[in-house]
Image (cartoon, rainbow, N blue to C red; front, side, top):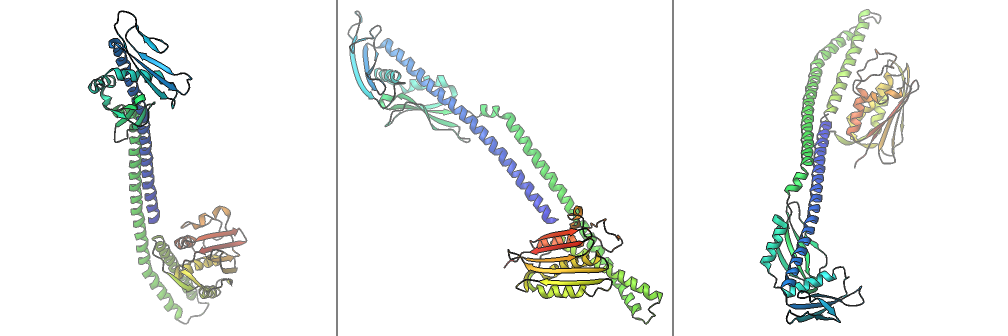
Length: 472
């Protein structure tokens, strides 16, 4: 019972940790997913803010500039070069690659640059060329840029730095994604790709909106976890109470056995004294004394069996030794052949190559004795018992006890291993017994790490086998 209680405790604790772990994993994934969505939104906001800044600066340059700036670039999907221009008002006509100005606006200076951009497509061609012109005609003001982006992004914007790399950046990318314990992210946005320049912007990923969106999920998960812990606590309390009741029962049985042994021994001694006196065989007192002696022996056997079951249930450590199983079985066979109440025939079929086996000698012999005793008890006046011992293919020892008794119905073949269970199919319910023999067999076999098997047919007999592993 104690081992089962410990197993239930262990399973309950492992289940609680597993469920809590699954709840934590689920919440973590939910938060991570929400942070991923927020990360994408921040990247889009940063990109849009940069585009807005460049557009506004470009318009300002066009309004104030008195210089025509022409940029020509070669792209992979255009056979001819692509040209873009930033010039004074109404002077953006290009004829043969020359910028002409209308009268009244003074002299116009033309600057021309040519780039080979054939490593990329033309999707961003005009934007990047206009950005390059704007950057050439203005002096980049970091403070002005920060103020402008801060107005667009609000509190999410932390700061920005210009980066010049070895490769052109055409698409916005996330350099450092936020984590559950680090709520900042680094976004790199194309700024002036022609000159390999990009803008790295550090932004805040606020957790409060994410937590608000998951509030009901977290409350539900917390309630489930609390209910689980309370249920486990209640289960442990009930098991502790059951363990206490079981200990009281065990103590009571021990006390009962101890208290009954003394009067039984005294009764047997008195019967022996009277039986030793010379009396006529037909004397009524002699018959009474014989009956009292037999019932005293039965009561002594019951107490011994009850003590064995209680000890086995408390998991007294087994005394594993190497012993001569062949000689032990021969002694048991010889003992049961001397039965005075019935005509008993016992045969032994020993097929092992060795006489030695590993196990608790006394407990295993008690198991075989219980099986043979049941064969005698639940058979007719003529009892045939066959004891067999052999090795299995796995190196185990199998001991079988077969009889020609009343047999056990299929419905009861599992129930007979339960303590205090006695079948209603027995023809003589006055037959001595308290239903502990097979339960004791079951406990001892399990304690050895073995297994049991039963084959029985009503009216034809029963065969019970036990298999005991052999560990070196």
